[in-house]
Image (cartoon, rainbow, N blue to C red; front, side, top):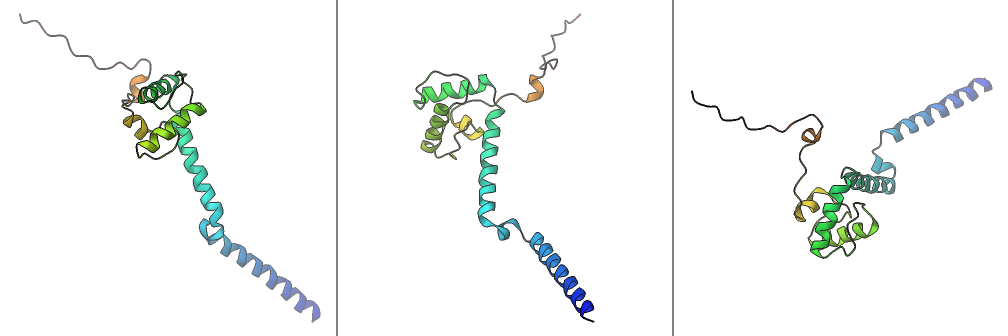
Length: 140
């Protein structure tokens, strides 16, 4: 009889832990740990902005740097690299122009700097020609 009560108790404890574990999994992230969620969102947002500049090539970053030099925010020569001085200049420019301060050359910042958007990637691929106008036909 004691053995049966003991085994019943063990089974009850196991089910209780399983139920608590299941309930914990069903809670949203913010209910589990709001600090962890806030950190995750900040890292995600930072990651998005850092990935954004990785899409720009050296020529495009040089164009951003030249625009920052013309606007008086960057004192150094354009290098084509997104270095600390360029990031600081971008942050100052973004703050002064009421843009989201990311320190990266995001689309809004490039537009405000007067940089035209790049052509679509499909036009850049080798072997894809831009449409040409047809030559005028001679009347016979």
